[in-house]
Image 1 (cartoon, rainbow, N blue to C red):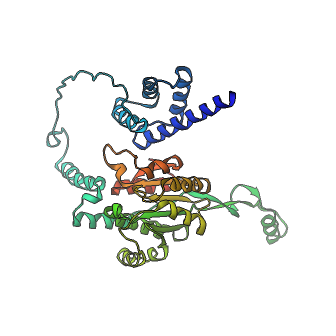
Image 2 (image 1 turned 45 degrees about the vertical axis):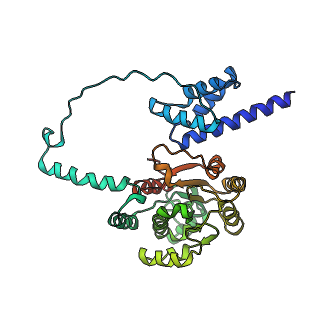
Image 3 (image 1 turned 120 degrees about the horizontal axis):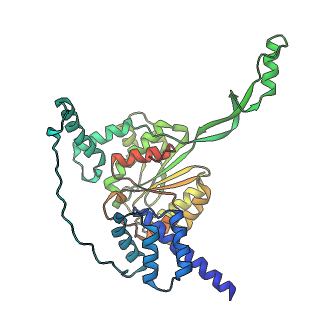
Amino acid sequence: MSEGVHDGERDLVAVMTGFARTLRAAGVPADHERTQALLRALTVLGAASPRGVYWAGRLTLCASAEDLPRYDRVFDAYFGGTGPRPAPPPLIGVTRNVTTLSGTPGQSREQEERAAAASPAEVLRTRDVAAMTGAELAEVRRLLALLRVGRQRRRSRRFGPSHRGRLDGGATIRDTLRHGGQTVRLRHRAHRTRPRRVVLLVDVSGSMSPYADTLLRLGHAMVRAEPRATEVFSVGTRLTRITAELRRRDPASAMEAVSGAIPDWSGGTRLGEELRSLLRLHDAAGATVVVASDGWERGDASLLGAQMARLSRTAYRVVWVNPHKGQEGYLPLTAGMRAALPYVDDFVAGHSLAAFEALARLLGGRRA
């Protein structure tokens, strides 16, 4: 009897943790602390009533009124029903005095012109690349070629000279001998650092065709920044290593070489099989693995989940880049995304230049 109770508790934790992960992917800040508060609430209230689960989650997982519509959509989709809804608050009209840019006190014409010029540039940064004109895409490609993709540092096993750290007896003795037996200063050494490896998988299937070219150009920027610490593969119906092609200095030349190297453009997606190939043939241990895909798995979703579980145990960090996450109201409800998300550390957008800049900061160890 006791064992059955413990199994039930484990099932509840698994279900509610998965629910919280799906909420986070939808933009609700259902972090670890809030999830623990939900589990404590359900321990007291019980999980037998859908209404009780709905309100326990709503009160513990949401941070503001803006989270409520997304919470309702995810609750309905995740639990397969319609949660109870509170009555909508009455609408209150508010009148504000708005000052136009040209009428801002103390603002010079030069400042106005700079602000007006900055607006189109900001729109371009945040616009979905799938909706861009040819000229806009060309400008984004130019900016991507200039993007500096940072890289988080990791401690190496090798040592190097340092102002502090452990005493380097050999270097101290050699320095003493050079100075006629007089110890001028103590020498120290510390572990060197090196950039953490990144393995990038770019989905080139038909559903990703509006974004694949831009994501591959992002891969080119990554390889250019850290050629020895970056591996790039295309994924579709097969796994293809394209790192060598992306090492070319000129972006156009690199993309032409990549185009000739990928045999499965605009086909289907078998992410589970290709992740299995990656883990069997290539070393991902200690690396940050970035999967750029919309998650439309054409193969067995359970295989994808099993391989993602293996990957999460092997890699330092798993980042999933989904272009559709940048769209308002998007929910990660495809079979592939549902199978993968429990093993993803960071679920981010990949639809715009601003999203690529945010990914570059993330790979450099910065969240902002």
